[in-house]
Length: 156
Image 1: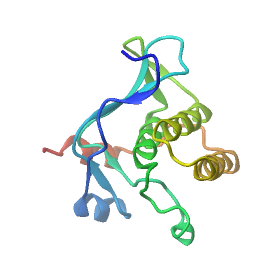
Image 2: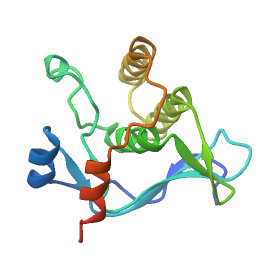
Image 3: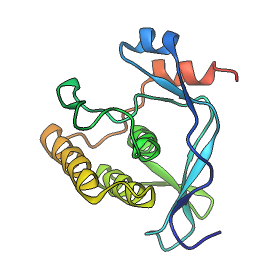
């Protein structure tokens, strides 16, 4: 395995109208699983995003879509951020390891760097995500049983 952060495969998603209706907002389904290998851990660490996973892309208020739309060069980083926020876990040395919401945000920033998202855009996104975390006080996993059921019942 490479000693630098990287993605094992490109992001492949398709819009899921049924899940979007059920969950009350636009959702796309990952159609090809991938891993994001994390550089800043001292042991082999990664985030696995399975085929079937549902994401809303970058969770940007519609008012700001002209500046930062839900999808862009940072899309794959946003998907990784979604799944780590939902489970507050990464895989370290082959075993699940708990992480903090702040660590999730650091993974987002690192993944955007790997994807070569321009520095200013990376800083704006990272700053907004950090501000949301601090203002909302969210520090718990955000996965819901309804979303997990939709993911589990999907077949490619």
